[in-house]
Length: 440
Image (cartoon, rainbow, N blue to C red; front, side):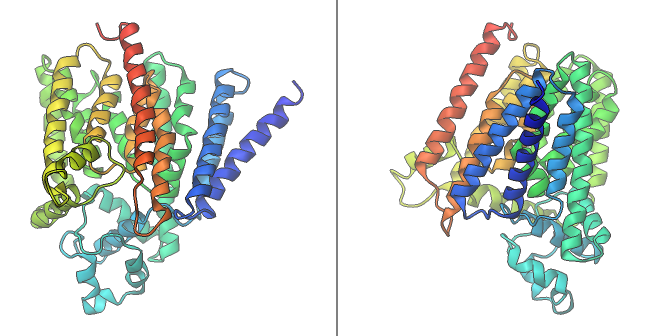
């Protein structure tokens, strides 16, 4: 027993070191070492979670580790994604009074005075889509511009400021997860499945993706269920103003309160009004915004599952990649399946379970599934017994192996291995759900 504290300290320190190594030392192209670090960090994460579940130490010890793991990355340059460059680019334009929906980065660089600014000159080579208008909703733009402003228009300081803002959102998310677990009679230790998950730490605090903030807004909606519909609608409008994908949950939220007309009315009014106000900046350039969204859904493909099957079968009869037809078609099919799930299971499945399954359906039909895309269903899954999301959070790290060559080349065996394991666990979770008579 006397050795337990030493073991715990060594375990915690090792976890922080591995997170730091991934954040500071391993570039995306060094796929072998990156995957090795992910494997070690997930192993340590699972040991820490089992230790917390045993009650050997107070939970706040583990939350301290989760906080320190995020803090370790405070000064790291994102090495696994270039998205942060566009975040800061957009924020700079907003502060200069230029809409990020009006000009593409390439057009800005061709503009004499603005394009010559050192901040933009340093950022431009880091952009991965310089010929597209911004696809980030205005609430994101507020955070981007706040980061650049508090960072005194310095690239590195702005990066740190953005990370601090996301860290504050992560703390709020963890507090809300804790509260919702208690309200729903679930063990608070489940919050560590999100707090200590290495993918969450790396993608939100390391690579600065906003899925963590989007999860915070969705949890805000769930906290208001059957309590304050107007506030729930406001939270949902905020979620959609961070990223459009939470719209897939709208049927679930509305149908669940179908017979409570005043609740539906309050939710809808708040959602529409606040969404309209939050997105006023888009309307003058709506055509540009939608054009970039359309390009995204009709041009890019990465780490997909069902999409690749349909594409490869289609190419038996076609001599070109029919992505511009298949991606929108599969999105429509996904919408139909989501509507079916929302109507069919709203009385049979807990709202958390149904929300997770809706996200899984959405991701299954998508042409692009980056690792950070699964963070919202991963966060929601801590309120359920769906453990496939934890498995996926590790297996999706295999997608970084595709960056070992330039240009990016995807391996079929990586895709098959990832999705075979993930869907096997999903099938097991669904079977267990039926066996436990959660579906009646």
